[in-house]
Image (tube, rainbow, N blue to C red; front, top):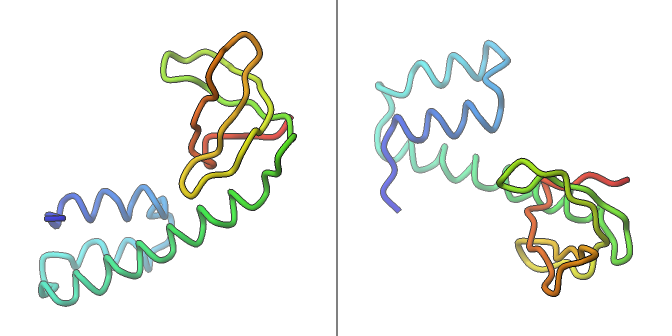
Length: 109
């Protein structure tokens, strides 16, 4: 995937909140980074993001009652039906199919 420095900056700021001076200092120095340094940084960010997603997903078990917000902004409640590799399937009463939800969008109720 081709990634511009601006896109990488946005992703890192979203992932970290750029709340620490150290993170902001790294982000401010992007223009001076070589392509190899940016690739290495991207690899680190991807690893941290995947680890965070695995930790979040491991908190949910089949049968847990969860809630999430749909794209339209509606609050939806359901039960965890299955944990997939990227998403968690949620059985919602009144719907024939399961909803595939990103683990970071779910909260236990």
